[in-house]
Length: 118
Image 1 (cartoon, rainbow, N blue to C red):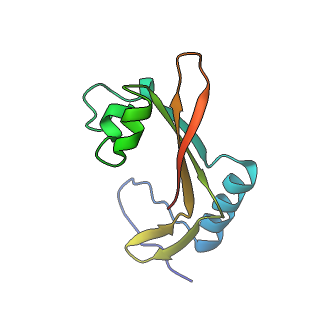
Image 2 (image 1 turned 60 degrees about the horizontal axis):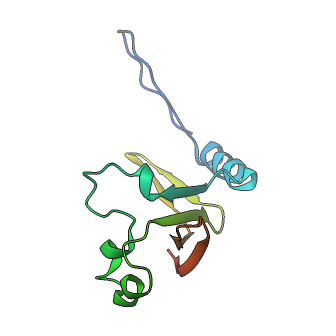
């Protein structure tokens, strides 16, 4: 149990317990809300790493050879419920996730090219 500081001026104080944080992560995970699809057109042009096969040549030269300068999609999701812990100065979290990359062909077909567990 913690005692909240008393203030004589107007202020907003937010207190989060590990129970509340764990309940929130469980709810989001169970509802499937920890899943995102990112396409090449969603990233700003000034972003350093664009989702195109020519930009992935450093990581996989064969990708650019097979699919020259094609747009890509990245599908991200949590594999299990995130872990959160409360500390006096911060909220610490661990996310167990996966990322699957796809090349988007001109006919809108998606070809899976790699899967990473993060």
